[in-house]
Amino acid sequence: MWTKVYIACSLVFLFVLGFVVYYSASWLGSITVPADAFAGYEYFRSLAWYILWITTAILLILANIHLIRTSQSWTLWSTVGYFCLFVLSIGFLLPIISITFLRDNGFAPELTAYLSPFLAIALCAGFAGLVYADSFLVRKFLIRTDDSATIDELETAEDPAPDDLD
Image 1 (cartoon, one colour):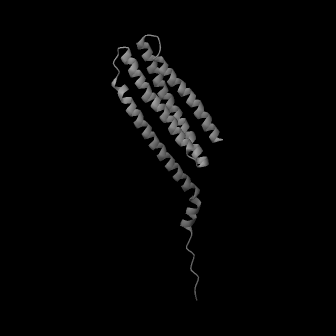
Image 2 (cartoon, one colour):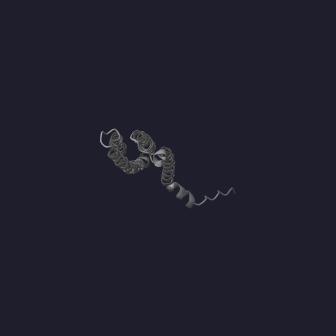
Image 3 (cartoon, rainbow, N blue to C red):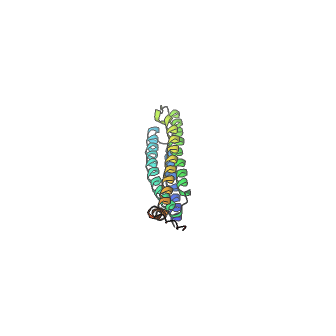
């Protein structure tokens, strides 16, 4: 059941966030005043960041539940793929498009537009490390809770007395 819940949520989140990212980029192709077009782009780009963080947290919680229930970590790594896909599109592709838009319309791009791709790559690597640590800790927790009864029995059991060889 948790697999179906995870897949359904990830598909819904994928389409919603994909639309917001597309809509943000489409503002740069708008026929309105360039300053208004860039303001619309910035608004929907920041909205995409908020949606990304919230949906990733929800998917990470669902992936941990799936890992605990089935001992399969593919949902965690799918969450990393989801996160990295949108971090690279929001933080890498959109700033490159905005730099081109600003230059074509006679504006100077901000320094953050140039640094954003590097930060996006670092964010992807950091999130992958976080998910790896999460997977490691959850698996250790599962091993400890599954074997806790046998470990307690072994620690409290007395050594059997050797038979007298008389």
